[in-house]
Image (cartoon, rainbow, N blue to C red):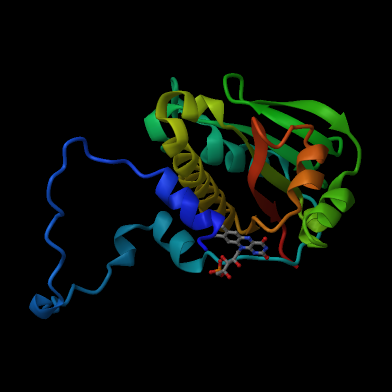
Length: 228
Ligand SMILES: Cc1cc2nc3c(=O)[nH]c(=O)nc-3n(C[C@H](O)[C@H](O)[C@H](O)COP(=O)(O)O)c2cc1C
């Protein structure tokens, strides 16, 4: 019996109309190795070290500045010029509402905020020290409480599925990866830690961010903060 993942893969397939023959499979006999030049990381003085030094950090302590938070958010889901964002998105549809759970940011009240990209501002949705509750919802991962912030990508699936149907479910997960990769790289560049978080109890996490889990759901999170 096939699992739901296999069904997902089948049911979200794009099929070529009128296809009559399969594409010729790759022939492993013809494989030859082509050596590449050594990667010249010094050609990327800003980005190179961030890519090479990036790793997932899980131990955090202390507060982050609002300036750091601003850059992290701008690079992850902000608009960099006009309507253009720092990350790609299938069809340019940008399905996420970026929520920010603030634990420890200098001069900011702890709580759950929603990011308004048009004004590059955070609107407080629910004041309170919610980190402990998020840690419980995330299988006891303490970084949800100890990190300065946890970014939560709440997917509004209809933004993408209205155009792409079931195939859109594949796209939103790919979009999420692009966002969090930028979070990782900018955090590393600012000498902060970052960790992607996908291990969480869906119902509890969605409840905390006040979404129904069907039309809108937390898809991926990222803890960011000062490393211990
Ligand atoms: C989709 C995804 C989900 C992840 N979820 C978690 C998580 O819930 N908790 C965690 O500690 N790390 C999580 N990670 C981080 C991985 O464990 C980490 O990237 C991997 O071990 C490689 O280590 P590195 O990032 O330090 O290179 C996740 C990474 C990805 C890409």
